[in-house]
Length: 216
Image (cartoon, rainbow, N blue to C red):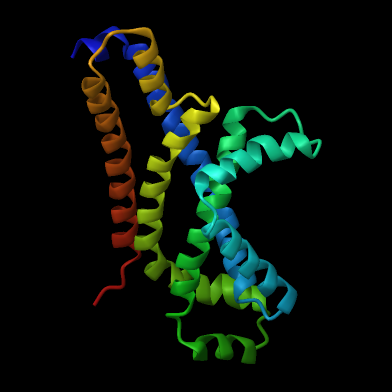
């Protein structure tokens, strides 16, 4: 218990850092994932190829390698000035977007093709059909897997501690190096913090799922 009370400010900073990193990465992943999903079902071949390449590359690249590519690759390309926190948001957001894309695309596939055909028959464009007819219905199917991906994203933020980002993982590194606290007690309190975050995400998506559920 002493490790928490003696270092409460450090745990609070790590907790808030993890929440902020999760929230911003999730926002980037949802925007990119939805856009790439639209590319994947687009009638334009070039967009479909780009979407397929994005998903294939990022889904099969280990997250640590993506962190290294962003951290070392962008400065090498002359794109300097990004701090480690925003580089972590970029790595986590791009990585998760590939999985979000596939969750949304699986939801799109559950919408009967006849509805898109009916929308086009009355003159709606592809963007109008996708945005007003298909995606709202696909969301009902995609919400549960997206919720699971958001929970995985929160736990993946621990990798950012290896790249000088302040979050819960960095608390463990600092306390291990600077004190004689029992490492198992440190991990216990960090695990409690992660449980609070993941249970909150799970509850929010359960509420959203119930709100969008079709009454039977």
